[in-house]
Length: 112
Length: 116
Image (cartoon, rainbow over all chains, first blue to last red; front, top):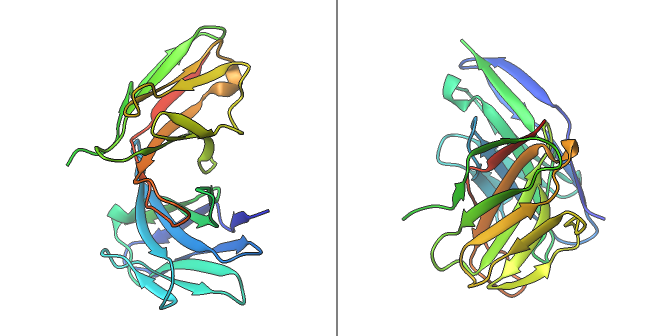
């Protein structure tokens, strides 16, 4: 069975510092990988996705994630965070059959 | 273009009462999903519709939960009777229908249910 593990439930970080949110998955088949962001009292928004091709994918607001097949990881990084990046981030895996499996989420808290 | 619309945004009810949530997907999206998101967890699929047909309801607790999408557009999720453990955020999402390829899901803002 497929599963997604987000290793940190909360990540506090100072503004302008770098951050990495970790995600590992388990699957016996090829996967598509995603990061979603959820701001307070809002639904999930797709941040970035890996479907195929380059293993490094980027979002429009400075986040990037790298698909590492050998380590079954898809960690999310940003070199310099802003207060507005405070949100909950969900890693997700799609393996076909219209089913997306979500991790438990990592709450990123950016402090001034 | 309007996104996925859900109502109400918040609902507080006593246990054993019924409750219903409504979702209007993005126009043209034939696939509709209902998810439940417990506190501190990621969303978990309850049911998926292709047009008006429920094609995956394996995770829907059928003793108290029901859903419908009569005209293949908007959908209603109902709980009757509600239990304390049903307190969660109920998310609706929609996507273009497809075969086995991936189609991006777009999520609504959710309905936060509190059962007292």
